[in-house]
Length: 373
Length: 158
Image (cartoon, rainbow over all chains, first blue to last red; front, side, top):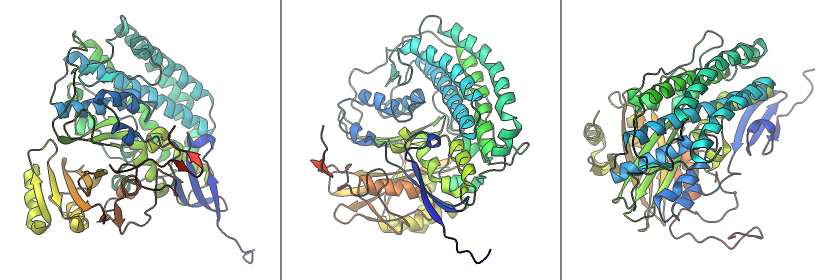
């Protein structure tokens, strides 16, 4: 048998492929079923976000463009943008605005994690959890829709405020959601997290060591799954996050090993519980106020620059904004978490089987809208 | 650690490479000569007192005065401090040493800065366009960029 000459084969996975979650092409070098190398090719969804920003006539106009970066977490995308401009303008927002932003960001984090978990199960071959996740995400979208009229691209936050106050009855509905959702997490754990087949497919697969993760700029649940307790909500706190009690889950080795696919998946499950805690605390102390009072009529920041980063569901989302004193941003750079996280994919995918590559890619939870901007 | 202390430590080692330090900016920054950025980056990562293990963000910029710039936001997860580094290069000869060997994050970020701004990173292992098609002409985030009328026979402005 050793006489048979074999060659590596290069094949494309994507740009149209059900498990790439968008338009992504991976050039795989295969030795039989073993992946020798992966080269991601991105840019298929490039929409010139940064170029558009330089063509705006008002800083507020950029908000809907941020929505479309990671279209599953629009609230979390608005957040660093408005914080950055407020920092440039040196303005404070009313307490109520800050509270509502935190509530919305955390609800959106749960919605995003539900998509990540659901589609991840689907990639691996479990269809039922996907439906469970989307059923519950729907309840969050309903809340968003009642408040701001949109179900996906909210365009909700404004520099200095919000587009709408919460709708009447929001607090009760949100509390009801928390009450209903806690048991669902348990249900999902039984259905997927501790499912033997799922564990076989994900535990000890695609191990990403902590030092490699940090060097590649990997952030968010993936970094924490590798055992690094790093969450900007605590480590570089912003808005009101220092007022709430919550934990930062990190990877464990009770089922798989630290830094594997199962841990990356499980971390999102555990983060949802922490988000519920934050939302519950914020609802209890939500102050009254006018959410539009502090919105500036005219935005002309002094010349200067600022880099503001927040913990979006996928990791560190940052905006680097240079102002030249006019009403148009001089330069905007978006530091998108999916972009950096995807860059590290080859690092933990060399030497795995093709089927495990699917598991690895799904565990990063990329949104190509954000990778390509 | 405060930005001024970081500046002192870097200055003791690379005094000749520092062009400017602004400690009272919103994000304090150090302006360096472009050719020394790799040495400084290695020092920042390796020094026990600094431990700048991660590059948060790398941005290119066209300052519209004949210079291009690269801005590095670095931070230390272990010590919890951060600093901004900046370099400037002339637009007609925009060469900056790559820091990809120090922080792998720079791999894709430098490709992006090359793609959109046109900064050439010397020593980068794979400096290709990343967001735009390989045969695209020009660097769109330059201030003097003109949108081409056609790309491969397709009309560009809509």
